[in-house]
Length: 181
Image 1 (cartoon, rainbow, N blue to C red):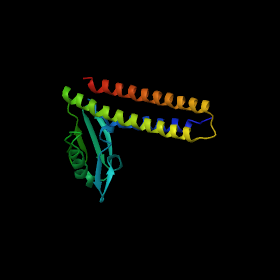
Image 2 (cartoon, helix red, strand yellow; image 1 turned 30 degrees about the vertical axis):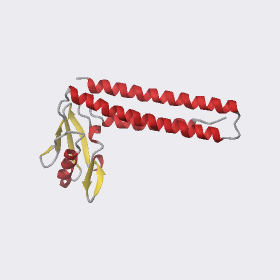
Image 3 (tube, rainbow, N blue to C red; image 1 turned 90 degrees about the vertical axis):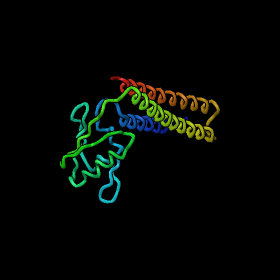
Image 4 (cartoon, helix red, strand yellow; image 1 turned 45 degrees about the vertical axis):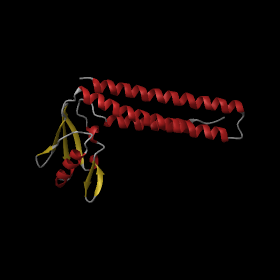
């Protein structure tokens, strides 16, 4: 019998990566994950923001960033300003950085949903790659009978459909959250 547990784990990982990407997508409310992709140049190298500062959501329209080393305030502010996809303008008082989250326009919301839909396609491509690798492994397994190969292929296709549906559900939920005023 062909074992699909490894393929299931790979597909679960692809869905988890997609969910992590969706956390970074901006909605109308402030959320620390929305700037988690920012890389800050400190000590001569680029580091993720969460490794040089603590990020919290003070309320629905404000993020507060407290650097571990106050000398990195300018570098953190510059890194956030430099990321044009965020469209944020941080302000610092020498100890903390406040990042006001402006309200999204209808046009900007639609743009964000379109960007998020490209991540859906990337996740589905990852699932299809796992499926193709599994199919190749099934075809090359000489010890399996034709019936077992057919059953294994159907199981892989069912897994792909199951995880694809999970991605669609996650995207639908995120789209509704983005479009909600």
